[in-house]
Figure (cartoon, rainbow, N blue to C red):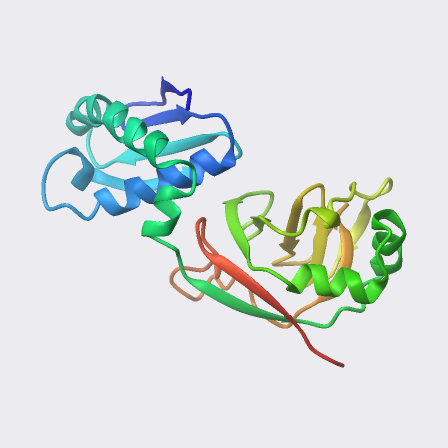
Amino acid sequence: MNWRLLPCGERAVLVELGDLAEVLALAAAVQMLSGQQDGPWSAVVDTVPATRTLLITVRHRDALDALEAALPSVLTAVAFAGPRGAERQRPGETMTIHVRYDGPDLDEVSALTGLTPREVVAAHTGRPWRVGFVGFAPGFAYLVGGDRRLEVPRRASPRTLVPPGSVGLASTYSAVYPRESPGGWQLIGRTDTVLWDSGQEPPALLSPGAWVQFVAVEG
């Protein structure tokens, strides 16, 4: 595992890693360590994963130097355990999302993958997905770890309006649109599950590290 520690303001450090699997493994390790009562890890207030980086924010500037000094040993331990090591220690919450697989791009995905529509649904529901990171819009979770046969390009012409609850595919990711917005993902279904509710705490249903199991329903 190769990494770089990059300064990010007065209360954060950005850890640059090789891929998303390493990011999720480090994020899980940091989350476990942040439960300590004292030391630099007790000052951690937030972790924000992205495709190849993890942003770690602390409560006060004094804790940042100690955190940066402690990070190399944690990174070495994560590298020794392998990208899946920390995931096994903290598997994360599993959310079940029921989907009606009647999306307008289901036939297109079928043609792109060489699978029948029924096989596309079976592949999408056949294994749990993991929330890699959140972006694009509040509550929009990029899900990873699905069946690689479902890898498809974004639409050549994005839609100007995608209904909330639309379930889509793009590249190796899957996602559920939390609110009405433009979008270019291939839409294969829809769900009534609410992904973002500003009246709840936290407002986002899915957070990095959580697992999602899609289940097909009729109607």
